[in-house]
Image 1 (cartoon, rainbow, N blue to C red):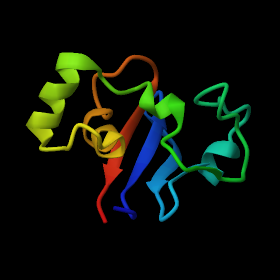
Image 2 (image 1 turned 60 degrees about the vertical axis):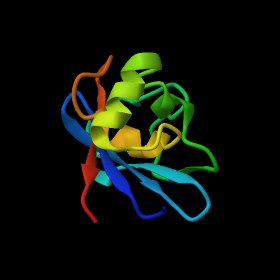
Image 3 (image 1 turned 180 degrees about the vertical axis):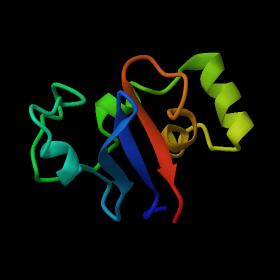
Amino acid sequence: MSGRRGIVLLDNRDCGLIEETETGYRFQYLKEFLARAEPSAISLTLPCRAEAYEAERLFPFFSGLLAEGTLREIQCRTHQIDEDDDFGLLLEAAGGDVIGAVTVRRLDP
Protein backbone atom coordinates (compact mmCIF):
# COMPACT_ATOMS: atom_id res chain seq x y z
CA MET A 1 0.00 0.00 0.00
CA SER A 2 2.49 2.67 -0.98
CA GLY A 3 1.50 6.27 -1.38
CA ARG A 4 0.08 6.92 2.08
CA ARG A 5 1.55 10.05 3.65
CA GLY A 6 1.42 12.08 6.79
CA ILE A 7 2.67 15.42 8.01
CA VAL A 8 4.78 15.22 11.16
CA LEU A 9 4.28 17.97 13.71
CA LEU A 10 6.59 19.00 16.53
CA ASP A 11 4.88 21.11 19.19
CA ASN A 12 1.94 21.56 16.76
CA ARG A 13 4.19 22.96 14.00
CA ASP A 14 4.74 21.17 10.68
CA CYS A 15 8.27 19.78 10.66
CA GLY A 16 8.41 16.83 8.27
CA LEU A 17 6.75 14.42 5.91
CA ILE A 18 6.52 10.66 6.42
CA GLU A 19 5.42 8.42 3.60
CA GLU A 20 5.11 4.83 2.57
CA THR A 21 7.15 3.94 -0.52
CA GLU A 22 7.47 0.90 -2.77
CA THR A 23 10.47 -0.24 -0.73
CA GLY A 24 9.47 0.86 2.77
CA TYR A 25 9.27 4.29 4.38
CA ARG A 26 10.71 7.77 3.98
CA PHE A 27 10.90 10.63 6.47
CA GLN A 28 12.14 14.07 5.50
CA TYR A 29 12.27 17.34 7.38
CA LEU A 30 10.54 20.23 5.63
CA LYS A 31 12.83 22.91 4.17
CA GLU A 32 10.86 25.62 6.00
CA PHE A 33 11.39 23.81 9.29
CA LEU A 34 15.13 23.41 8.73
CA ALA A 35 15.40 27.12 7.82
CA ARG A 36 14.27 28.09 11.33
CA ALA A 37 16.91 29.26 13.75
CA GLU A 38 18.08 26.15 15.59
CA PRO A 39 15.43 23.60 14.54
CA SER A 40 14.93 20.75 17.00
CA ALA A 41 15.12 17.15 15.84
CA ILE A 42 12.09 14.98 16.55
CA SER A 43 14.39 12.22 17.81
CA LEU A 44 18.05 11.53 18.51
CA THR A 45 17.80 8.79 15.88
CA LEU A 46 16.49 11.28 13.27
CA PRO A 47 18.71 14.36 13.58
CA CYS A 48 17.87 17.41 11.47
CA ARG A 49 19.21 17.20 7.92
CA ALA A 50 18.00 18.07 4.44
CA GLU A 51 18.36 14.53 3.06
CA ALA A 52 15.51 12.08 3.48
CA TYR A 53 15.75 9.09 5.80
CA GLU A 54 14.80 5.80 4.14
CA ALA A 55 14.05 2.45 5.78
CA GLU A 56 12.52 -0.89 4.87
CA ARG A 57 10.59 -0.97 8.17
CA LEU A 58 8.79 1.82 9.95
CA PHE A 59 11.29 3.91 11.89
CA PRO A 60 11.43 2.78 15.55
CA PHE A 61 10.73 6.33 16.73
CA PHE A 62 7.37 6.35 14.95
CA SER A 63 6.53 2.81 16.06
CA GLY A 64 7.10 4.04 19.60
CA LEU A 65 4.24 6.52 19.22
CA LEU A 66 1.75 3.67 18.79
CA ALA A 67 -0.41 2.19 21.51
CA GLU A 68 0.09 -1.40 22.60
CA GLY A 69 -2.10 -4.18 23.93
CA THR A 70 -5.78 -3.61 24.47
CA LEU A 71 -5.67 0.07 23.51
CA ARG A 72 -4.10 -0.84 20.18
CA GLU A 73 -6.81 -3.44 19.58
CA ILE A 74 -9.49 -0.84 20.32
CA GLN A 75 -7.88 1.75 18.04
CA CYS A 76 -7.56 -0.76 15.20
CA ARG A 77 -11.19 -1.82 15.56
CA THR A 78 -12.38 1.79 15.78
CA HIS A 79 -10.44 2.89 12.68
CA GLN A 80 -10.94 -0.45 10.88
CA ILE A 81 -7.19 -1.01 10.51
CA ASP A 82 -5.41 -4.35 10.43
CA GLU A 83 -3.48 -4.81 13.70
CA ASP A 84 -0.29 -5.43 11.70
CA ASP A 85 -0.59 -2.12 9.81
CA ASP A 86 1.63 0.11 11.96
CA PHE A 87 1.76 2.87 9.35
CA GLY A 88 -2.03 2.95 8.94
CA LEU A 89 -2.41 3.15 12.71
CA LEU A 90 0.22 5.90 12.89
CA LEU A 91 -1.71 7.99 10.37
CA GLU A 92 -5.05 7.46 12.10
CA ALA A 93 -4.23 7.45 15.79
CA ALA A 94 -1.05 9.50 16.32
CA GLY A 95 -2.66 12.84 15.56
CA GLY A 96 -4.06 13.48 18.99
CA ASP A 97 -3.42 12.13 22.43
CA VAL A 98 0.14 10.80 22.20
CA ILE A 99 3.03 10.97 24.64
CA GLY A 100 5.49 13.72 23.78
CA ALA A 101 5.59 16.65 21.41
CA VAL A 102 5.38 14.77 18.09
CA THR A 103 2.11 14.02 16.33
CA VAL A 104 1.30 12.77 12.82
CA ARG A 105 -1.62 13.94 10.69
CA ARG A 106 -2.75 11.97 7.64
CA LEU A 107 -2.43 13.73 4.30
CA ASP A 108 -5.23 12.82 1.95
CA PRO A 109 -4.14 11.41 -1.43
